[in-house]
Length: 460
Ligand SMILES: Cc1ncc(COP(=O)(O)O)c(C=O)c1O
Image 1 (spheres, rainbow, N blue to C red):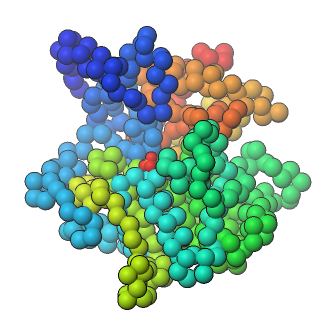
Image 2 (cartoon, helix red, strand yellow; image 1 turned 135 degrees about the vertical axis):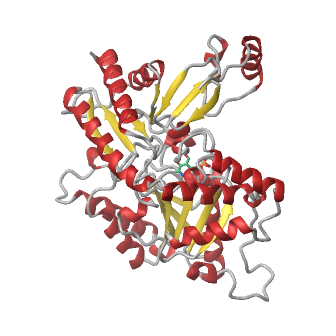
Image 3 (cartoon, rainbow, N blue to C red; image 1 turned 90 degrees about the horizontal axis):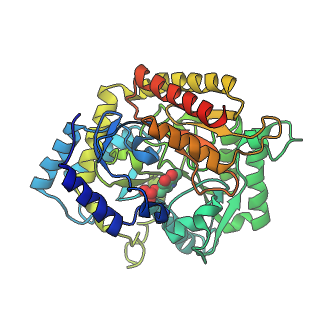
């Protein structure tokens, strides 16, 4: 791949970026002395920056998004064809792509039946929160208005979703937040909060019930959970956790909202993360991998039972979901999502995710046997994490700066990996891996070998 502007052009672009662009999630002081990163081209898992440096991307666009890899001409063609035919009409009307994609999506989600389009993960989650509040107002006489969320989970960047944020470093300074969001404990067995309990999974789920009883079951309308916590440290659920959570929701008539923004559309080797655990959700939200970043699209998916709650009194002018997402009506999103789904099916990428995910975990386990700094490895499919500690016995978290040094070393050796970033004070110590679902053996080996070298260079 050979993407290079003329040298003067590059300098102009870098300076324009330095002078005018405010990068996401970045402290900008550093860019007064070093050039900001600018990515210009990608193919498969390979990526090139503006200086012509090549990288292997082990994090699918930085934030587990580009599930089918870069440079998919067929998705670009589908988007182009749609845009020249009709680029936009508000979501109060339907479109061919939206109808067909919702049908394909629902085929893969037994029990679900309705798709509401939006354009980011945060926004899709906000839709659920608003629906829960409206159900409370219209069907529970104002009761069941609170929403539970879990320590270490993340659901978005808006004030509503930050109110449901289990990562204090994400929400710090941005309050006050809307009331009615209540935290339940995390379920990371490696950091067991219940050492005396015989069954960690049950204990972690029962901790949710304790919060429900403390708050009053009649006040709780829904619980929002990631099937596997992503940015909070790649937390795979302990055995026995999900069946008990499901039971608790049923017992107290609490709607279960599964945030599949990261896990959805193949990341864990199944279409949805929740399908690994036999969960029956009332709401599912998906975003990042839906169109692999080729278009901005997110979906809020729910059941016919929930849908019915919003059309039972047609004579009441306020009795429907009074919400719109302007760009949720962009017609490029659903056609990109349809083609993205076709690629996953035709190239058997779910199968590849399961097979390569196991190889990836074998690689990480091999590194754990060699590097005492790795305290725990966790993952499902191509969604993996390695938690770094100072001491395996005490499990004292590794200094964030040293974890960053590993990420930096990999980057300078041409492999982009991630880490928990500004999430939990003192606990930003988990390396994250989420390569495209099309990864092959050579690419897997390159990531593991580069990480091996970086761990040796930082920790000896
Ligand atoms: C689990 C989860 N939910 C929601 C979001 C928010 O998605 P978006 O950034 O598209 O608003 C994210 C983003 O990283 C996420 O990881």
